[in-house]
Image (cartoon, rainbow, N blue to C red; front, side):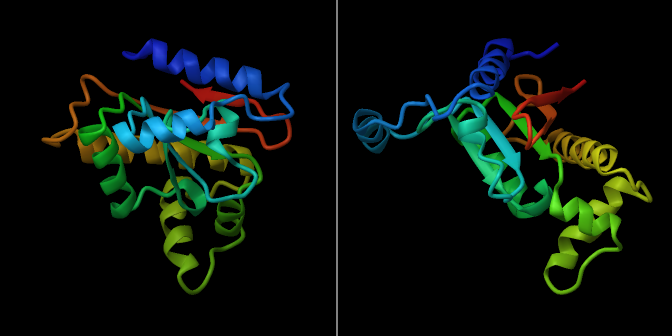
Length: 186
């Protein structure tokens, strides 16, 4: 059970609203822009997700400005740079929920299943390969990749002085790009 149930429930409800929405109901008004500019940001959740243009966490969870701290990298790979952003958001901004959000039809996962990539992209597919092994089913591989990210965050942060994991939930989920539904991984 989530320690920060209210935050997780808001994300779930936001996704429920999103599935039937034609526009993002999150607050992006001049007032909220002014407030966050003058008083800083106070997000409650961190979402680490893929850079895929079809995956927009603020829309998926019906959030406006300042509600979630979004970190995007192809394949939602948890690199040291991503860990630095997580540490900042959880330790300094006080985010209590970290979500690793994979998605269906992920190009980085597909490239890994297909044998990997070259150039800088190889850094990503090599990391995903550690997560998925020889799995060939896209959806199952996506789930393995998300769980690998959750496990890495928990491992790296277990003795972190900035983030107390006793107070933070680290959760995994898969976003279906066709239906808009977020399936939470137990």
